[in-house]
Amino acid sequence: MKTLVIGANGQIGRMFCSKAHQAGFPLRAMVREPDQATWFQEHGIETVVADLEDDFLGALNGCEQVVFTAGAGGAGPDKTLLVDLYGAIRTVDFAKAQGIRRLIMVSAMRSTVPQSAPDFLRPYAAAKYAADHYLMTSGLPYLILLPGRLTDEPASHRIRTVRDESLPITISRENVAECLLAALRYDSLCNQQIILLDGDDDIDGTFTRLSVAC
Ligand SMILES: NC(=O)c1ccc[n+]([C@@H]2O[C@H](COP(=O)([O-])OP(=O)(O)OC[C@H]3O[C@@H](n4cnc5c(N)ncnc54)[C@H](OP(=O)(O)O)[C@@H]3O)[C@@H](O)[C@H]2O)c1
Image (cartoon, rainbow, N blue to C red; front, side, top):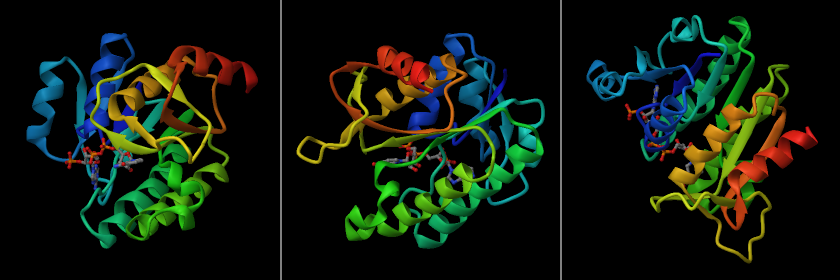
């Protein structure tokens, strides 16, 4: 099952692509600029150049699964609407049109209750809330990962999936990449939202438990 990775050139995207390729999962990395393809080609990973703001339907051709880990970052409110919201919505529509078997969305913990986010994050959290709602009601099998605030620590391979505001609400990008990899391993795991925070539970054991419960 080939997986299209949207946002492949991002920090989580590159780590995930590298790990998933090494684990033997067929991938296609979607990047925005031709020169971004070089790194992936050097790692033996297929690429497609496409932009969420343009027509990217063709990028999905021949893929059966999509990982969406793109985001506008600090590019401004217009890009939050065009990439985090509308880009995600169009991904859902294209995925349905192409018969994609599962869409794995990297969302954000704050997207479940945007009012709980700090003021500066609320527009982003609201955009992700709306995109996630669109995905969950689309009829497309989905898995929505809800990381807390991202850090650049190396992977601890240990997470928690329960929100507890008395504890730190961070997770390393590499742990998120490891969770995406675990999600590929459990291809029957779907129609769940999973909070991701650094914690004490082994990632593989957590995904085993979640997949048994689904
Ligand atoms: N920061 C946080 O604390 C936090 C918390 C929870 C969830 N998240 C989510 O996690 C995601 C991944 O995090 P990250 O650190 O890996 O982000 P990142 O390094 O900023 O990567 C985002 C990727 O999205 C791509 N992108 C932006 N606009 C695009 C477009 N129009 N078409 C196609 N691709 C586009 C970027 O492309 P280029 O490489 O060309 O720029 C980049 O590769 C974030 O985007 C965010 O939604 C973040």
